[in-house]
Length: 156
Image 1 (cartoon, rainbow, N blue to C red):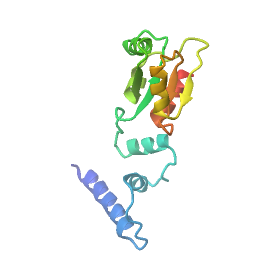
Image 2 (cartoon, helix red, strand yellow):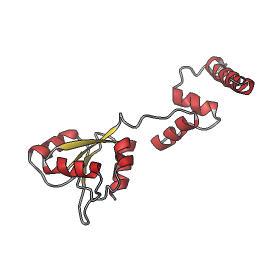
Image 3 (cartoon, rainbow, N blue to C red):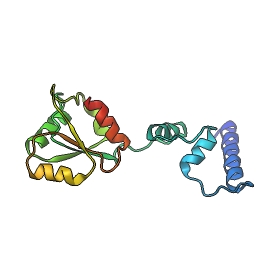
Image 4 (cartoon, rainbow, N blue to C red):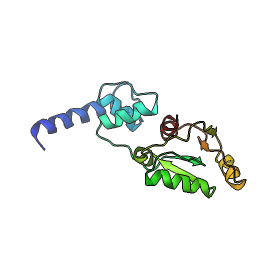
């Protein structure tokens, strides 16, 4: 570690300790709030802003643990992921898509004129699969996480 890097690291540690042990004693603080303090920014209200803050702090959020539950998607692309989604739709099987999947899908657009339904509860997806429904469905699982919003943007 260079002396400049050591000085910067020490300054960051002093700043964090000052906040944690200072007169306001706002402890405990979350890691995100500490990252915002370390960079002199406000803590973002939205998920995209928080991810950008983590990247600024040299922390790369994983792109595999958060998923979007889907059913019946038939993207027009010809990549293997698009073909796999069509295959799952043919067999009335749901699919969980990660942000990594969404980055690798070449063309997620559905065929022209396709109406995609959105639901909140995964049980609706199960019911659609059990009823061999042919209409595509995206489930928010209670709230539209960043992966769901990314999926919806890709589908429009």
